[in-house]
Amino acid sequence: MDFRFSDAKLEKLYTEGAGAQGYPEGVVDSFLLRVRTIDAAKDERDLRVPTSVHFEKLKGKYAGSYSMRLSGRWRTRRSS
Image (tube, rainbow, N blue to C red):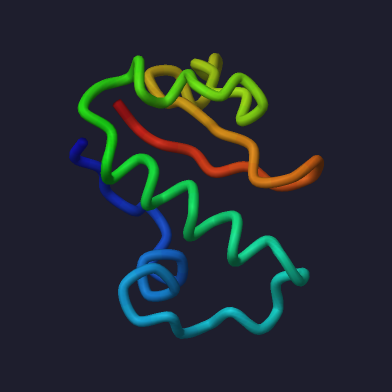
């Protein structure tokens, strides 16, 4: 599935593995796992399983985007 990063720091973290400091332990690993999941997905249905990631359509300012949970406090957003 095609996606793009809206944050250059997160793109660098994914592509080069740089910039992990400053994030809590485990969040970077969860982020990388989620981005790899998005990259491997054929369509949105692949992202709805497992339900524990809380793949959801956003409203308001981010309408047309989706988010997935990394942990209780962190989530990643994807534009459609």
